[in-house]
Image (cartoon, rainbow, N blue to C red; front, top):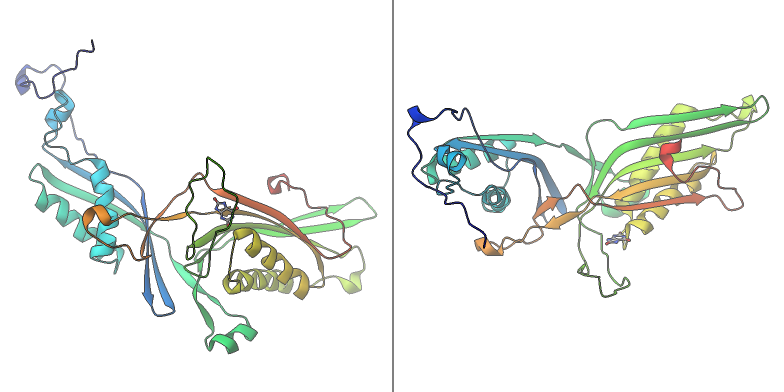
Amino acid sequence: MTVRPQPGRPAASRSSRPVMLGQNQYGKAENRVVKITREGATHHIKDLNVSVALSGDMEEVHYSGSNANVLPTDTTKNTVFAFAKEHGIESAEQFGIHLARHFVTSQEPIHQARIRIEEYAWERIPASDANSQFIGADEVKHSFVRQGQETRLTQITYDGERWEVVSGLKDLVVMNSTNSEFWGYVKDKYTTLPEAYDRILATQVAARWRFNWTDDEQRMPQWETSYKQVKKHMLEAFAETYSLSLQQTLYQMGARIINHRAEIDEVRFSLPNKHHFLVDLEPFGLKNDNEVYFAADRPYGLIEATVLRDGCEPRIPEDLTNL
Ligand SMILES: O=c1[nH]c(=O)c2[nH]c(=O)[nH]c2[nH]1
């Protein structure tokens, strides 16, 4: 028989303790909450990483294991997601103030709440000329690129005869808050994924593209213009593809580059599917109408493929980290 320790046994008096508890706090760190606010076809994103640390009368849980004063860290997590729905996220400061006040005023043993928030900023993806006429706007209303520069990359190889230039980028984070579905896939006895008819599609693009330039000075590509244009076509294709899978979006991104940039014969992508799961707010009596998401960081789907100009040979290695 297991003998359970008895929590909450009267603690020895402070003075009789040989080892004292010092400063302590607890909570749930790094709650990745994404809130989409829909104004018709125009969507707004708030993307936060919220860490909660609570402190107060917490001696007993440390000394004797009595949880009588402990609001579970799981509850603090739920509160973050529920508050995103109930109060919205106008600003990180206002959201943090709401949370901190809630924990301290609703729980007697909690005397202090520290809420730390990192906010990831997003800007809208500009529409292509053709699409801006069609949608009557310069920006796609549900497509975003995360602020902060991607890293631009290049690799040049020369063996005295042949040149090969492969350029690329990594850490270009993009999101569509609608126009993405995933259904009709194979189902076996281990499949639990529900079909999705309106989901968030987000990825962190790693891409490499190979130039068909060999050595003719006259026909050397305009490297700076080329980079800007490749990135522009990649972003436009991401924003303007109504996606039935990330694989399909990937192909469209590559095809758009090959079709618009004659200097490029091959593009390879490595696209992590940055899953956003709708949070179940029903237990708190709240309806989650595709508004509040948990942004999971792992595991993630990883979709990788090469897109080639017809008749060209694939030369970019499968594993982009080898380049
Ligand atoms: O766009 C997707 N492609 C997949 O292959 C896949 N698999 C999965 O579970 N979700 C998704 N989404």
